[in-house]
Each structure stands twice: as C-alpha cells, then as structure tokens.
Image 1 (spheres, rainbow, N blue to C red):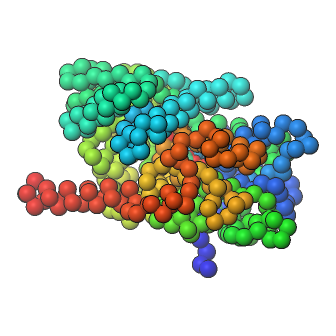
Image 2 (cartoon, protein in one colour):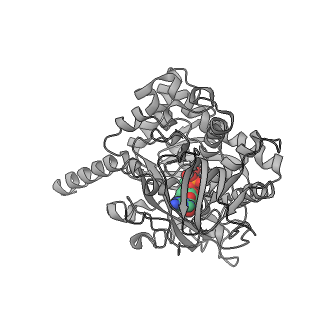
Length: 468
Ligand SMILES: Cc1cc2nc3c(=O)[nH]c(=O)nc-3n(C[C@H](O)[C@H](O)[C@H](O)COP(=O)(O)OP(=O)(O)OC[C@H]3O[C@@H](n4cnc5c(N)ncnc54)[C@H](O)[C@@H]3O)c2cc1C
C-alpha cells in the first residue's frame, strides 16, 4: 500500500503557535511503549479532550488504563492550533436542516449539544484554572444579501413554531441591522451567545495534565497503519516508524486526516483546507478604531462567508476568504497540505476592516499573518462519533466540519464513556445524527461540499450565460 497522506512536516505558522509554545509542544515521553490499553491517535482538541475524560472516568490508580497519544507533528499543530478560536454554537441553522430531514427531537439535540459547549468549556476553564483568554460574548450573524436574511429568518421562525428551543437569538433587520452590527451593508442580523478562546493554550494545558497523570505522549510520531483485526491477544497493531504499539482500544482523533488511516471513510470524511489571518492596528494610527466586543459571521452570498473574532489584545482574527479560492476545487477539497496558502486568497484580508466596518477607515489596520489548516468534512455535515463498524475495539471521533469548538468536548466525553464504562451509544449524551453507523455510512451519496460546489458552478454558468 502507498504511504497514506499524513500531516506535512512544514505547516504554515498560525498566530496561536507563533509565541509562548508550551513545554510539551515537542514532548516525547521517556520510553516508547510497546503496548497500551488505549491508543489515541492525534493530539488536538479531540485527543486532549479524550484523555481528559478517560482519566476523569478512571479516578483510581487500580483501574486507570494505560494511555498512549501518538501525534504526527507537534502537540496541537492540526486544525486546533490554527483555527479562529470561535466557540460559536450554531443555534438554529443546522437545527432547521435537521428538523426538515429528521424531525423535532433530532433538531433539538443538535442545537442543544452545541449550545451546552459554552458552559462545559467555561466550567472546564474555571475548574482546571486554564489561562486561555476564554471570553463569553455575543456573535452577530450578518447577512449582506436579502436571500440569506429571509431564509435564516424563516428557519428561525419554523423552529420556534415547532417548539424547538433555539435559545437567546436576537433578530434585527433593515436600518437597525447596520447600526447594530457596525457592518457596512448589513441587511439582517442574528445575534446569539458565543465564546472565544486561545485553543492551543486550552489543549496544551489538558495534554500537560494528562501527561502528569501518566499518559505517554509521543509527538512527531505519525501512525502509518492500524491493523483492522486484533491479534489472538485481542490487541490491534498501531504502526509508526518508531515502533509498533499493541493496543486493546484505538481511538482516531485525526479529524481531516482520518481517511488516510481508514480508507473505508474516503469520500465520506474528506480533508478540506481553510485559511485564517490575524489583523492588527498600528499604535500610531491616525484614528483609533472603534472597539469591537462582538464576534461575527458575515454572509456575502450562498457560497461565501467569513468569521471574525476580536481578541482581548485588540487584534482581529478573520477567516474564510472563499471569494478568492472557492471556485478552484482542487485548492481546498481533498487537500491535506497546510504548508501552502491558497495563493489567490493570500491578500484577501488586506484592508478588510477598512472595507467592511464603520469607523475603521483610518484605523491603519494591516494583515499581520495568514495561515492554513486542514479540517475534516463529512458527507452529510455531521461528525462521525462512535465505534468503527468494521472493528469492535476501534473508535472514531472526527469530522467536525470546520466547526469543532462547540462539538468536540462533549463528543469526546461520549466516546470516553463508551470506551471506559462500556456504555452503549444510546446511553451516552450524543446527538443521534453524530453516531457512526454502517447504515449512516451507506446512506452517504454525494458529499455535501461537492454538492454545494456544483450548485456554485451552475449558478456561475447561469450568470455568465445571462451576461451577468
Ligand atoms: C483555518 C481554520 C479555522 C477554523 N476556525 C474554527 C473556528 O473558529 N471555530 C470552530 O469551531 N472550528 C474552527 N475550525 C475547525 C476546528 O479547528 C476543528 O473542528 C477542531 O480543531 C478539530 O479538532 P481535532 O482535534 O479533531 O482535529 P485536529 O486539531 O486537526 O487534530 C488532529 C491531530 O491528529 C494528528 N494526526 C493526523 N493523522 C495522524 C496520524 N496518522 N498519526 C498521528 N497523528 C495524526 C494531526 O497532526 C493533528 O494534530 C477551523 C479550522 C481551520 C483549519
């Protein structure tokens, strides 16, 4: 078999990883183990959350499983170390789709699961004393074209009419939308409770705690294969170029890279490249820019949206930039290489604040850094969380569709309960739509991202045909 496309070694440097790296960033625990009760592949938000929950569920040293985390690069160097840090629950858009397709119970589960992450991460940060700039605020979903505005409003109304709890969504339209959001040209806005944080600091804190409790962490140790059947001793062989670990249970926390190890998930869990930036204002700017306290999603058309998070240090994180690369499918879909920017998008963020925000015209805001990262997109848009149908002792917690911050922590808790306590999938707190089942995998036909791209191409052709 050809070598699977593993994380590349020379990834772009994100702002979050550009300073104050944690001492465990490159850690290789003493002794490369030959066996373990549980091997977690991947040391991002998912891997760290899994270790945290597994250890919490096994408080006595007598029943504490031996855990090995194998990470291809540095700790938290995947999507988690290069994302926007936006912990923004989707209170109603996914839920509305779930309502149409799967009914009220499924819609409610999806909406609540995400929303509960704000409290869950807030509690975690307080309990563990994690210094990660955790801020709870409001996110404003700004619609810059009427179709999105009307469609989102209709979704919200439909959920409310069906009695689905969508939480504290505040809606504003017309003239008040631009004033409320501060965004030029806003037609409609939806504001919800949100949070943001420094993900690298959260994850490395959790990993360091796990290591202090006996977890063996091996960075720079890519897994090249996992045996699909256990040996006679009931263990799977997890192979790396530094040796093989025989593990009773294996958990894939490999997000966008999962199908490289599990070819059965190819076309169902696809690596998708995203781009993000940090914008800063010079201290000697002609005019001080207005303070932004909310975070944002900006919807420009059906295929283009950005997200923006003002940081506690006054800088701004902006990601998206689809305007400049979405048309070129092979620059983002099925791409596992985060050592390159999408060239066309490199300058997308220049002048962004001046272009879009009232009062920022003379701010002098400039792009300080731009980086890319690899996300895992599933065929139906919901994560894959559960036991691998073809291997009883192997589990997947991956495919967070570029939106893992409000989905990962509690998904990892569900997997930890299944693995440690032997609970059934019906006994854990996990939306039905996230469950990894043979039936769900069989149902997946055209990948949602490909279907969306096809719609985009058709629209483009139609406009060109109409001379528009
Ligand atoms: C540019 C960008 C912006 C984003 N912005 C946001 C945002 O603002 N809000 C939000 O909710 N989500 C955002 N996301 C998505 C979010 O970052 C992910 O959903 C989340 O971090 C997933 O965490 P994870 O631990 O599952 O994956 P990752 O952080 O990618 O971790 C997987 C780890 O597995 C390792 N690995 C993979 N294969 C192997 C192997 N064979 N052997 C050993 N190790 C392996 C990788 O090196 C990696 O460290 C963004 C993603 C990107 C790329």
